[in-house]
Every structure is written in C-alpha cells, then in structure tokens.
Length: 323
Image (cartoon, rainbow, N blue to C red):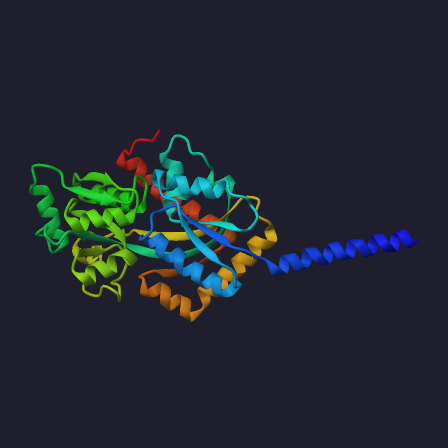
C-alpha cells in the first residue's frame, strides 16, 4: 500500500512539474525565421510581432533573416528546426504556397512540415516606377512600353514571389512584353529601382509608402478594390483603366510540424490577442498592412485557395519549373 501511495505521489509531482513547465512556456529565447532580407514588408511585420510577443511573454523574441533560393533557404531552416515551440516561420505566400507550384523539387513540404498558426497581415500590391521614367499614369506606362523597341524591365523580390506573379498577371491582362529581373528580396529590388537600374516594380504597400513620401519612387496604381488612405492620390487599377486587376501579399506564422499542441495553442491564442489589440492594429496599419485575423485550420484553407489562384497565373504565364 505504501508503495502505491509513493508511486501516486511521484506521479503527482511529475504531472505538477509538467503543468508548471507548460505554464512557464516560453522560458527562453524564441526565434522568428523570416526567409527574406531585412528591410522588406515581411521583415517589418515580423519585427512588429516580435516586439509584441516580447512584451507578452517577457522573453526575448528575435527575428532571424535567412534569405536565399526564393525563400527556400529560410523555410527549410524553419522546417528542420527542433519542434519544441521555440522556432517559428513568418512567411509571405512565395515559399509556402507558390514555390511548391514552381519548383520541381523542394527540400521541404509545406503541407507536411508545418503547422499553420495564423494569418498575421495582408497588404495590397502597388505598381511603382522610377521618377526618371516619364510616366505619371498607368495609361502613359502602357503607351511607353508599347512604343519601345526593347522590352522594359521589371524587378521583383524573386521568382514566384507575389511581386513576380502580380507582374505576370499584369502582362497577361495588358498584353505587354516585360522582362523579369528577379532579386533576392524586396529591399534590393527597391534599391535598384530607386537607383534607376530597373524602371518598374510591383511591391507591397508597407515598403512603398515611405519611398513615395520621400519622392524616390512614383506610384501609378494600387491593386486593391478601393483607394488607400495612406496613398489617397493614387488610383486603383480599375480607376486607372485596368478593371479586375487585384493582387495582395500576406504574411503568416507557421510552426515546425510536431510542435507540441499546447505550445501551438498558446502561441495561436497570444497572437490572436495581440492582433486584436488597438495598439498593434494601429502600428500595423501605419505600415500599410491590415490584420489578417485567421488562425489554424482556417488559415490552412486560405493558403489552399491562394495556391489555386496563383497556380492559374503560373500556368497561363508559361513560367517554367525551376530545377
């Protein structure tokens, strides 16, 4: 009888210790892997989240930029990280939705290697040009492109990015022949646009706003159903003469598959509380982004719809599969 009592006592201690450990999660530094260079929209949104989680958990939350391979390098790093609840991926559609449609073989499988946490934010795409390009409206850009002997170049944050596919959708709808110049992220693409090395870029609103305000780029149209308060003088594509053209990017949080369900549940709940707070919404909206407000299985279904949408663009554009 005594042995039974001692055994039950020991079991109670173990259960209590496990409960305390779960309550203390996280108890050390948490990594948010961003598969893009610093300075882009994904990076900016991830840093806002890191700051909010740091305040919530009172533990360091660091953003780790791992660019390369169209986002595949950082995504693989997150997929193969220990599934202990201390590493998460903050990704745009490219690596987890579009790349599986573009690459013949990937070192990860988004459907199997990750657990969806939350759709953190979404942002509209904006068509911008270098100010030295003598175009002030979408119609003028179309006329210029059609009058050139050589195709105009457009930059993107990489093959398969929403920037790239937005431009391909634009080409399809206008009949223009533009030449793609991919970069390793949005920041270097923007840098070369400002320097005049490439004349055209489809980019996310958060990174466009400060450049438009500084006069280093010119915005011709926003790919949203209505004008934006942050760029009130910039027309929608429909207003500019291209109805039906809408495109946006988004940023989601995912955990490596196998992450303890209790950790996933806590992170999901904490992010939901953060994104519903007026202060976080205000900070996010100041960058030009809107709160996503989608979690778990609903986020997984959202990604499936996105794959269907952009898969059609990839097919119609004739973009070849990447080895």
